[in-house]
Image 1 (cartoon, one colour):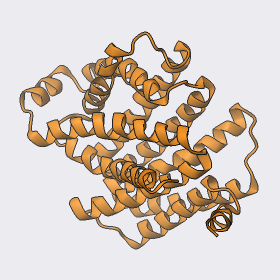
Image 2 (image 1 turned 90 degrees about the vertical axis):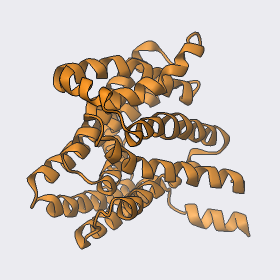
Image 3 (image 1 turned 180 degrees about the vertical axis):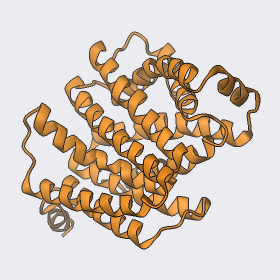
Length: 295
């Protein structure tokens, strides 16, 4: 990869890692479903200009909106609102990679390799360390459980994206955002209530507004736009390993900005999950091939 493109990839990973800190800040101003509504509402606005260029069949856009925009992010935001830390959520959410492999086996009959099975084993052991850490505080444990289910729905959305075979991943995210926002608003209205929505809207803070703008334009449109460009420019095996940086940026930024503690259990869990991601994401001999090309 060109140095400039490596820099872009790292910037996106940093933006997605810090994204979890921004969510925590946003939850201080908005109820979780409303925050998700505002995020996707803003991210879906560009649809006005690209309405005629549908990037995938409509039924797959709806399926992705349901799994990703509605269930995944609702579960993530609720889980973080219940007490799952920003850094911890950035780590646990990466379980989506393993849920994708498991779901692909049952739904698409794609057999995982031994390397992937080994990676999944390490990751689920790591998740066990995380759950043990949170078991002392029931609300935090419940929050992490919500995030785990969010990762499961992210895995489902990955399969839907694969089946959709989108001609433009960025346009797909914009369409998904536009379809998700109205449903999320309805859920927020009935689940969180009009009083909570009214209070949040009439008591806006700069941090709350900033969090919505960051989530919509930096984490969603800019992040996925650059990510789509990199995947279009390079092989997936070259770009995908950068995702290993997301929980690293998430854990470090939450510790620095929010003073979230990183305990021994969380550290061990993080090492196991990230190592599992390595075995699941990076093919065998990848580093050796890279070295040989460099020589």
